[in-house]
Length: 449
Image 1 (cartoon, rainbow, N blue to C red):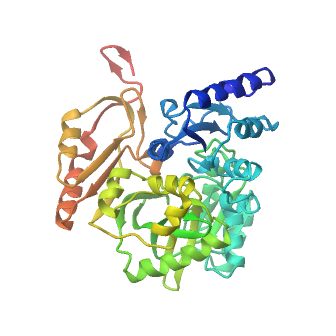
Image 2: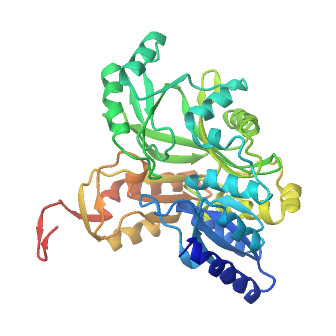
Image 3: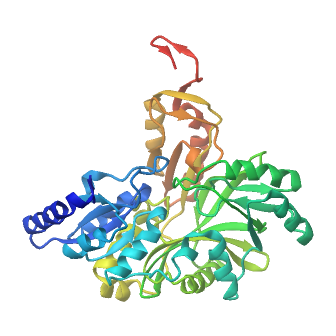
């Protein structure tokens, strides 16, 4: 990996220059922090004849996210705030700069604007990452949101909730993801208990939690709306209903994401709201992953990320939706006119039932082995389109308390809803047999685990 220290900059430019000359005709684009499902983007751009360079926004990679794959990139570098990164990317003629995942949003906005490329700009960048500013901005435009307060003082939060009758309420970090640090608090004691848990931790993106966002609880059913846009013309590439479970400690965890028909009345209302919200936050270009609550009064924003969905699985989405947001994102930046002609302003088609199942676990200890026979049984089920094992031998596994601690993700789709349901029930019955786990501190034949 190339870091932009002063004595390395000319070497970096020369190295990129040689790469461009050695790949005549291959244009170059930039992905920032392409962790997790951002790993699907290089291949999507490659199919359109574009090589990609990776920019890591911070010197240390984010350990709690799936790492970006160096083999997918022509080259990579760590961002240097002295302006040398911008100069290097301009020198190689970068066609676009986009975030690969949530931590890259701010830097991608800054770089794309500085290089005069297709961009969402920096004016609303903070409102696209800071959840307090996000909700304040959307509410100021007249769209439905939760009431909220931001503070580092638990007693101030308790007084706010009590004075306004906001019980239950939600306490969470300002800028995290995957239900990390999210607590549903039904009384003052629960809210007080949430504060040290949040303030004493870091976000999944390695950021410090210095304040807590407390919001009124939005009663209803939660949904995902995924989009890809060019110049404000958004294509809706999926609406999914969240099925969540609430743990005794007040933390909500994901169970299933269930594909909804675009003609469902709830989906129609959610799509209309999302289009208006994207315009308010100036997410006019590229992907967006929006989480909304359908309340009895209509849709209300939970949060939005200007990046691809964390459950993106291109082959799975192609089967149930006919297209996927990785390919749509590549098309939007490489061939925007074609995107607008074929997708701009459009809505997906639900081709067949589909579910994403994030299995919970009660296991605790160190993974000794993966039960390959059980994994193969799951993979061979008729509706299983993909399976992601999030743990490997040697990893620590803990009881599920957020999306990141769910140890297995399974993608199910089939023409028949009954087949999807049957396979889901089967996976439920065997999910705790996928990993063999040894309690921490236990002795094995090789020593202490």
